[in-house]
Length: 344
Image (cartoon, rainbow, N blue to C red; front, top):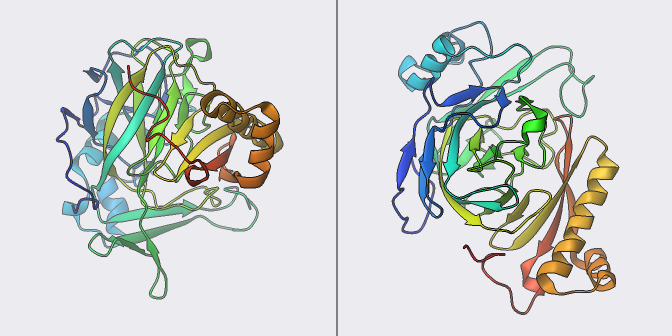
């Protein structure tokens, strides 16, 4: 498949393939045997599988054939996972590749996941919704799975004859393993460990910062999206199999409470809670804390600047736990480092 537009890239230090031995289906757990171990700073290309076409009682070839997808365009690892991996009872739908252990990562550290590139593994994706799903659960009376092809040369999703959407690929799920006190955690609700944050700003060129809860960090990814609007309002994006190239940078002794994101133009803090109002307050408090800790502002100035220049948005509104982000533009600062923290 065609690669994403990019500048000259550093070759990955390793590739982690999605096989029945390297994926979890529908959950995240701590202290599983590593699928791969890397040193801080190393770059890894990771195969990820979409769950679309695997959660019905049909073989994925049969599922996609109904939409005109030929057998040779159905990924062999999708067929292998469907045949050989059993989804635990009560688990969610997402297929996650991992865990990746980062040497030296310990609780209290921060793991930065820098997104160098994202490749498309197939030229099609699915938006799947229906009764009980999304922000308007009573809107539809029957399930609708819409297959959407993507034009990888022109970098657009072909929604209809009249509508084309520019592609913005990102991984809906990037996570470290959650605290062991939580046990086996469903892949649906996001949390402080990241997970199903579905935040469209985590595409190529971004960095996601996650607090480390367990030795090695234990990173997972999956739930590829070709494009998605804020909120993921019908319960899905264009769900698609992707192959991200990620660099794992360790910040020893740097502790954060919630996931943070940096792009070329913005800093983003996040708030996560089942109550949207609570999530909003957390995101804003995180922004104020960031402005105090990293920019040296007083609480009063940080609060005032947040009211004048920081935008709040709903990144995720459909997965039990809501995600609100506070977006702090970099251009307002006369001097702004490329990245929040220098790696150690």
